[in-house]
Length: 468
Image (cartoon, rainbow, N blue to C red; front, side, top):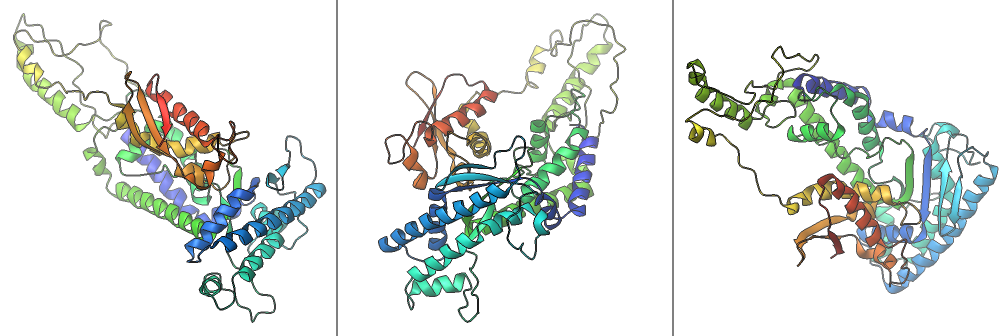
């Protein structure tokens, strides 16, 4: 990329982050359309993981009681949402409620009325995120206190529960604690959405110095990565609909803190480069800026061939050896004044072929195994995009985030065999042959499809996938 346009892009990003904080953007994004999804099995898994993360041992009896309470929660929640659905105005192109009490989705917009008092921090009835929270508040209160009652008083489990969720029985109306959270889908939180918005707003101002065209997103992200700036945590789509589900509090807080740290690291690196733009001259292989290896090669070619250009009768043909340093710009394309003809070939000086050999770079042999890192960077987002009915549907994002490539081997016939894994509990039950197995919802089918979508960019050809 043109270093000038790249630096300008970084400056614009920096100003956007200075001008708007995640807290301010949250108030803005909370007014957008939100799709709330609920699945009893996912909710049950989240709540069990949440309790275990708080040091509460789940005996067989406790698991049975949690499952019973989850069933009551599902019924109450679906009844409450159905009531809201009946009162909601019909909107063209929107089917608000889909599914059953065990697994459903509901589209919340600003015109939905819940009939409940908004939270103190919300923007009244206009706050769509708040509508979701208050819609499940009654059902969740019953679930929370049911869990507490199931833990016998005086036990370590009850003490841990009260301590972690700050339960105070001396209050007239004890708070229901924060055992569960309304969590954004993986990669679609406030920080991820905000970063995507700022990125797309200014990405078209960056140019590829070699082609003169606007840089593609892949090219821009590649150069940012070379500069030590990681923005891959931003959401993978420009669709600004928020996807929300009920997840465990500890997992949600941990995920949120991790994303904030990634944003902080990216912002610090951006500021460092803005303050010391000369750093870019030492970063190799930026698009449109000759790499240090290329510069060295061109300097060597120039030094070797220059004396022979002055000798009459010696034909010296070289590649383009004009060095394109990182400080170049591409605001205007210069037209060549030379005559049309064949493209310059590699260095060919009579009697000097041995000298030119030393400046040719050696290429590494092709190895699909070297793409494991790229696969793992893209796989969670690809899986998340494909999690639509009739396949497994997107809920908390934990399934998508758990998918990864473990190895790439070769079959006896010479074809690549890509091994992958995912969070086996509670999702393995949907594999064909298991309790809830089905061809449509089999996780292996979903992951295979996602891997093949990623593989198209590498022109790998025929290959196999396997769950390890």
